[in-house]
Structures are given as structure tokens and as C-alpha cells.
Image (cartoon, rainbow, N blue to C red):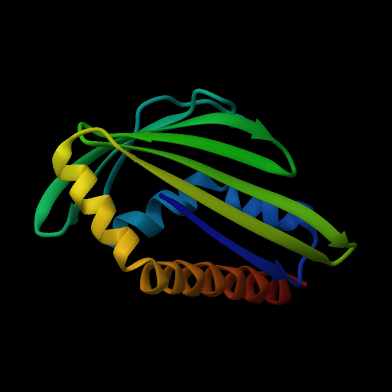
Length: 155
């Protein structure tokens, strides 16, 4: 199952990329939302191979997932591979400069079930794809507005 969202952001591509690749800030944000995040490799500056172990609650169960950056091409592309015992997910974040002060951010996540239980979960998500896609789009739009606000406050 694929989820895709696209948002235009009123900020330059370099600023947007610096914000989405500020992994320390993203880790703090996840911790505030109840996700346990532990960076397993420390690559400075960021590079492919940077990885995290995460734990979070989903559908009433504690889940564990390993996340690894597979592609890092500033200022336009990052790819991640997320793996758990029942589900794999490929994530791609792409930025395109529309003008000097406007950037299009596209995000794609592809879920791949590895067992029967996860196939049933992904199938239920497919049945509710309209609602799931709408929630994904709203999250992306909210994040884009937050980036615009940060850029305006910085300027």
C-alpha cells in the first residue's frame, strides 16, 4: 500500500531541507509524542547508514521498528527503510525548488506486510484508504505550515 502527499511551502529549498534533516529536533518531537527513539549510529554530517531503533504504541500493542537512512542527497532527497518483524516500509521525502522562495515537498510511504496479521492490517488500511490518505495529507499540511512559520520567524 502506498501513501503519498505533496505540499508547497513558502520557504527556500535549503531552509526546508535543513529543517527536515535536523534529526535531533525530530527525535525530540517524537519523544514528546510518546515514541521511544534511540539513535544507533552517529554520523555527522548525516549520511546513508544513519539509523534509529524505535518503540511506539499502535493499535493497543507496543511495536518496535528499526529505521535506517538509505539515501541522503542534499538539498532534494532522503530515503529511509523501516523494518519490523511484521512490516517493512520504504519512505521517500523529495524537495523541488519551485522558485527562490517556494519549495514543493513530496512524501511517499510504501507499506509491505511480511505475515498474515500485517496483511490483514494493511488490507484494513486499504479499505479505509480515503480516511487514511486524508489524515496523511493533513499531517503533511500541518508540518508544511510549521516550516513556513519557522521561516517567517527566522527572517
